[in-house]
Image (cartoon, rainbow, N blue to C red; front, side, top):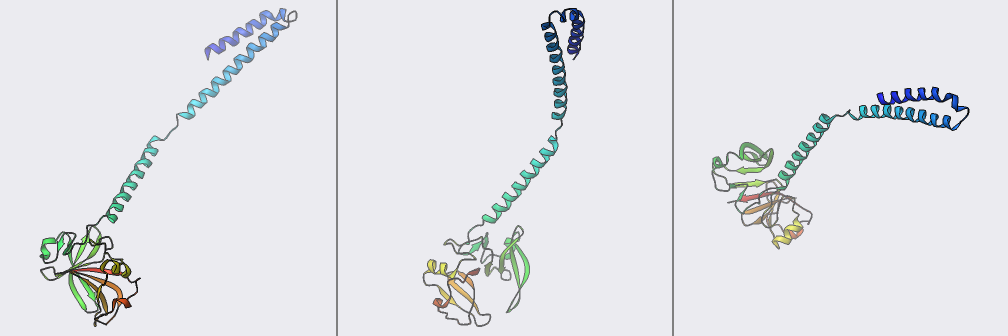
Length: 226
C-alpha cells in the first residue's frame, strides 16, 4: 500500500518535470498516462482482494460437525433396528428362543413374563415370551411348560414354516397335511409331529379334508407341544 502511494507521488513529480517537454514530444504524455492508469488499477485490485479475504473467513464448522454427528447416530439406530427385525433363532422341535417345553417356568424368568389370555374358552394364566419390546407369543402351563405358542413371523421351523406361510406352501412341504377342526371354537390346526400350525380358517369338522381348504389360507400361530 505504501509502495503504491510512493509511486503515485513519483508520477506526479515526474509529470511536473516533463510538462515543458510534453508539447514538443507527445509520446512522453502517453507514457505518463500509462503509468498513472497502472497504479490506479493495482490499488483497486488490492482493495477487492482485501474484501474477498474477509468473506472467506466466515464459516460454521461446529454446526456442520453437529449435523454430521446426528446423521451417524440416526443411521446406527436404524441399522440396529433392522438387525433385530431380521435375526431370530429357528423354531426347534421342542423349543424356541431357548425356552424348552417340559422345563420349569422359573428357568426362563428373563424371557417369560406372567399375564392372562382370554379366548372363547375362558381366561387363562400364561407367561408371555418377551424379546426386547416385542411379544413373540406365550408359554402355557402351571409350573411346567406344557406348550409354546408363537405369533411372531420372524421365527421359522427348520423346514421353513412360519407365521404367514400359506396352506399351499404347507402342502408343498408336508405333502398330505393332517388337518383337524374343533367343535368348540372351530379352530383348524395342521398336525406335524410335535408342532401344530393354527390356520386362519374355521371349521367344526374334526376329520377335515385338507383339499377343501384354500391355498391362500395362512398359518397364524405355531404351537410346540410335548
